[in-house]
Image (cartoon, rainbow over all chains, first blue to last red; front, side, top):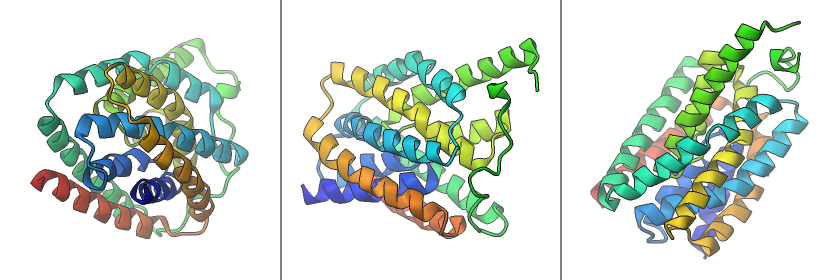
Length: 138
Length: 126
């Protein structure tokens, strides 16, 4: 129980900081510390992500950063992909899925290293309100 | 500024492609799909980093919802563990969002990458 709470806290902080990363910590956390198999860990991670994403969205929306029309379109149009992805995951063995997930972690890690080394000053990005109004509002 | 209809359609098609890719990715790997959505919003739609991150989070509410529901049909969801993780994670997100304006992104990204590499090694040797 303590383990689950610690996984949740750590994943949440990363999600708030970087916008991605809740799930990529939840899944290995559930497998390594709580002993779930890969399929259970992924399914449970997805459910745990929802409250995180809701609150994260609310916070970011207050900073004016959420482009609501785009977000809605992205979300609704993901349905077929999401169902297909889950079906594919369940067609794979736990071993194969776990190894594929480990490779994914390495790729995400590489992406963050590249972003860190290529981001110039390493200072926080522009404050909220910096971006000009999006075209989708027109 | 008026958006020409063709540009608007083009934009919607790109969003549909990103949504489908993110859905596949999310369902297959049990993650939100932000690591797919954020770079594609930046590359294909010219988003800045912060709006990309924020818009991605909002889309993930739907994506993770659809994927969790489908996984539920397979009987894979551990609801109690999800609650024990999801609720403290909300506190974590509040802290993380507050810290985002105050921490150097580079340091955070490198630390996070280190944790991911260690996790990957642990999963591969398991």
